[in-house]
Image 1 (cartoon, rainbow, N blue to C red):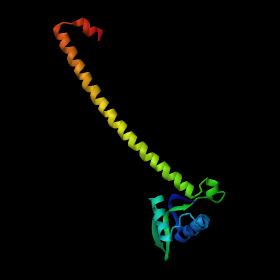
Image 2 (cartoon, helix red, strand yellow; image 1 turned 180 degrees about the vertical axis):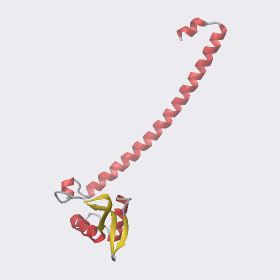
Image 3 (cartoon, rainbow, N blue to C red; image 1 turned 120 degrees about the horizontal axis):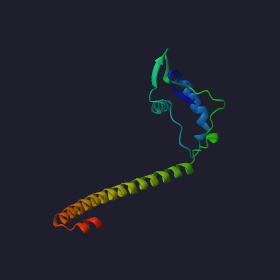
Amino acid sequence: MFVATEGGRVDQTEIWKMYQETFSAYSKGEHPKPLVASELVKQVGEVFPSSCLKSHHQELVVEGIERRHETQPFSLQDAGHRPTTETLEAQTVRTEQMAELSAMYTVLMKQRDTLVFKHDALQEALLDAVGKVKARGFVSIVQVW
C-alpha cells in the first residue's frame, strides 16, 4: 500500500480511509477490533521509522511515505493472510516453540562452554605431562602420543 520514500507525503485521512476499506471486512465477530485513527498513525510511524506526522495547510500529513503503485488492490486473501482465531492460536504455539528452542539453545551453549573449558584444561594437563615425560627422558612414550 505504501513505501518509504524521501520527499513523499500522504494525507492522514487517505491512510485512514484505505485502512478502513481494506480491513473493515476483517474486524467483525471474533476478529480483533480495528485500530482507531490515532493508533493507526502511531503504527505508521513504527512501520516507517523515517516518516513523520506534520501539519500542512491545516491538514495532518505523513511525510516520508507515498502510495505504492500496484496493478491490483491489496487483499488479505490474495496474500494468504486470514486473521482468524486459528491463526492467533498458531502464532501462540509458534511463540511458545520459539521460547522453548531459545531455552534449549541457552542450555546447549552453557554445556558447550563447560566442555570447551574441560577440553582446554585437559589439553593443558596433557602438555604439562608431556613436558615432564620429556624431562625424564621417556621419549618413546612422547612419540606415541
